[in-house]
Amino acid sequence: GYPESLTDPSYCDQILVLTYPLIGNYGVPATEKDEHDIPRWFESRRIWTAGLVVSELCDTPSHWRQTKSLSDWMKDESVPGIQNVDTRALTKIIREKGTILGRIVHALPAKIESLPPIVDPNTQNLVAKVSRTSKMTYNPKGTPRICVVDCGLKYNQLRCLISRGARVDVVPWNHKIQNEQYDGLFLSNGPGDPSMCKETLDNLKQILASNKKPIFGICLGHQLLSLAAGCKSYKMSYGNRGHNQPAIHHGTKRCYMTS
Image (cartoon, rainbow, N blue to C red):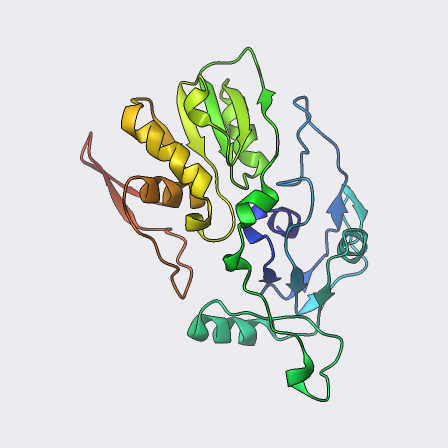
C-alpha cells in the first residue's frame, strides 16, 4: 500500500505515480512499534519519495487503524503531491520513454526555460542519504547471526529475519564488514546507482577474496554483489524488477519462478 511505498528508501528522491483510481481511502496508521522497537506499519522512519502523483485523493479515510489522512501525513513530512492527473496515461508515457525526470509545480510559468534544471538523483550517492549511521542489534540472543548492510533496507526484512529466530546486526552502508562476526551476510535493497557506493564495493571485494560464508541480498544488494565480483550493471529503460523469471538452482537443478 501507499504507507509502505512512500516509506520505502528505494524510492528516495523519486516522484511516485500510483495508478489505482482512489488513493488515501484507508488513511495512515499510528507509529506504534513492536517488541523489537520496529514500527509495525511502515518500512522506514520517514517518507523518502520526493512527491506523489494520484488520480483522486480521498480526504475522508475510513479504517479502524487510521490516525490521519494521507494529505495530512504528507504535509507533516513536507512532501508535495498532486491529484486529478490521468495516472494511467502518464504511466503509458513512462512505459514508452522509460524512467524520466520531472517536477511538481503549482502552475506553468510563462517561460518553461525560467525553471531551474532538474537534477538527476542518480548522480548522487542516495544510499549514504538513507542508510543508518551506527550499528544496531536486534534479537541479540538469536541464532543464526546475520549481518545486514543497510543500503536502504525496509523494516519488513528485519521482521522476517527476526521472526525466524535470527540475531540481526544492522550496520551502515560503508561499515567495515570484514571486521564483523556473522553466519550470513545480507545486502539490503536501496536507491540509486550501485556504482556510487564505492566504499561498500571495496569492503565486499575483500569479503569475496577471503570469506566462505553465505552472502545474499535484495535488489541493489544483488547489484552490489555482482559489481564486487567483477560484473557490470546498467539502468534498464523500463525498470524490470526481475519477477516471474525462471531460475535454476544449481545444487538441485530445480527451477524456481522469481517474485
